[in-house]
Length: 524
Image (cartoon, rainbow, N blue to C red; front, top):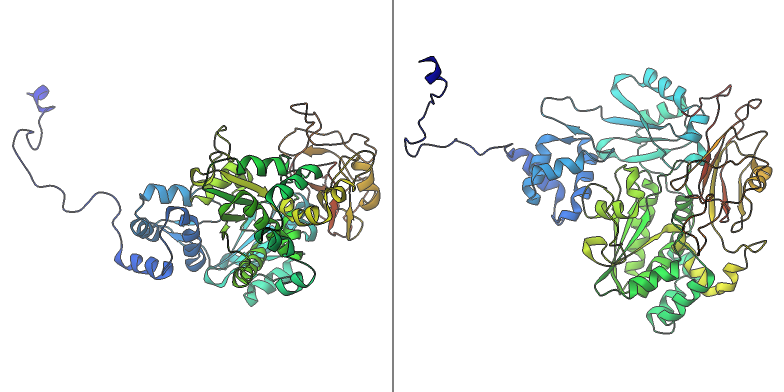
């Protein structure tokens, strides 16, 4: 009897039809939450690729992502809740709050603890802010925000009242900004559309659109100049344009403005100081490859650049300068990996930023499965000057047989404000440090994505250069153009400043600083 009882069932499987559950499986949609989501989305399309944009709307408005709103968003976009949740949980700038959890405070202060900010006391600032602001304000660590030239940098966000970057942060001025609700980005002065056109801007674009500049002439000028991709890979720009143009239509274009490498802020510099030169290069590239749509993927840590681009894109559309394509401005959400081109494409499609296997390459199967041209902000910035002044102008910038221009982000312990030209493949370390370093600066250097370590110092004579066309890899090839200068054993923490160098001899290098008297040191 005991053995038979193990197989007893409450309802015998042969007993016929029986009543099912009274409600569907899974989480049920809260009608009030659905109304809130629908009101917030308004007339916006419910396309799958807009998922991250819609999550930003919820995060900005409510200060977090409540589980009930995620369920309602899944219902409204006709997506599985698992798809919504896996995307929302992938990105650092989204805060998911379950039904039984307490929402975070209305104000969040993110303190950058990357290299340059650590040099200028980010660790101490975090402890001081937590003690001073109390439980009413959330203070958290964050990776590099691109404010390395004015470290330490912090970001203040507060639900519906905005998201802003604050630089040269101290305990006092951050507390004052929080108390005053200063969460809207401060827009720097820059030349607008009228000023740019007065100085000759968009004439090259209009010549292209009017048929006075053939596509072949544009691509040939870029090939002869030797302009390469300036986001890390260094692929020849003219060749990439030609490859994409040879693929079948329809074609698309994506701009990688998600510079997340610690110590890098060169793209931000171009977007803040001359956005239309970048936009003209972008439109020329889209015209050359006949791209129907342009997607600009901008990191979320640059709210001021987001505001500038949104304003100026609307201006050039109103001026009739974008007749052949449509520009989409997409906002990142705090994922370092999305700086990799295929991960960026996944994020633009509204998915997790996971890199794709190659081949096929994005020039063949890219965004939404279409051939896609991908360029960096700085690469597109140089297009107008290179074509108007001729490839000889670009190649004539080098020394000692080196050619071309590239921009360096220099931060940390530098001597003073400077923006100086540097030349392609020239020995880097001695020139940069003698001009702008202060004392014995480098204790150790580590390279970027393509290399482990580079034995550079103030007296190094090792040039760092692009890949040789006949070799698969050179041992001293580096990634993005960035450098953070740390103090030596006998130096204090001097004043910080910005220094942007244009040259191509060193692509990605930053110091691992030691401890010093007046600030923290970066983790090894």
